[in-house]
Length: 328
Image 1 (cartoon, helix red, strand yellow):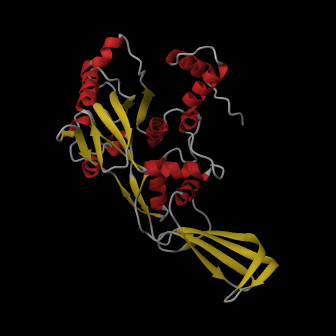
Image 2: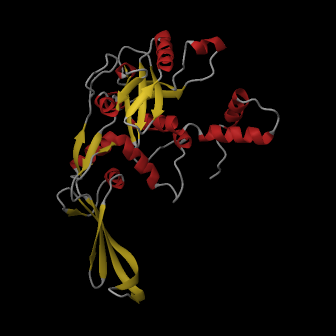
Image 3: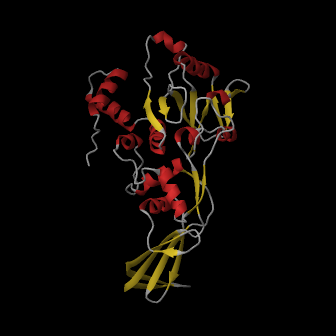
């Protein structure tokens, strides 16, 4: 596969627009490379919104408005989006931030200019906050002025999270005992190494059986492809059962933890990445298909029916905005 972006001409045009190019082709090439890499946090949020199933349109907004004097009064947010869950018409504006501190903070001048822009175009202003691997989406009005800046704590942002009711996010749990079981037949002893306290054997093996188990620990021969994909999103414990002629490798859920659909997307994409490669979010949103699971909500329902998923949660915020139609 070629590494050449399929929208190379647009990237070159953008590079020429935003840079003071002096004719050095190496400078232009570096600017194009940076644009192709994009702003990963914005690209990631766009991909997950598109994949969650309720997004009709999402795109970046031009950050170079005219006239130049407008910059003193207006700050253009990062994204504009429209979701099928909205009522009243019109898109929403989204400012994207990534911060691992438990308090997200905005300077008052910056906050005022963002709100001025939102008021001008008469659109709700939302904040998307990535905290480690977890995303939250909430109304800007929940930011409250502290001594100087406008702040919001992680716990309040989670309570007011709109990612479920607006974009379609869900939380789920794989039941204890659900997993994948591989039977490996011992074919040839390659090496035996005697240590002080133990002997280590290296075998040539062949996988002869693949089984699955549900949340009750019952073995079965098959599961739907969507449910199998869901198992790859979960941290499974590995247990080895050794016999004279074979080994069972059992990868099973302990039943601990809870996962969001949007964090599962990262695991699904990582599953197909070559070892050591990093996620290229901009190329992901240009791909015709993002993951092996097109309908995650449908996949959760099927896995619940097949006895693998134990719990599905539809999350609602403490304060329901008037532009969201609450219908799960």
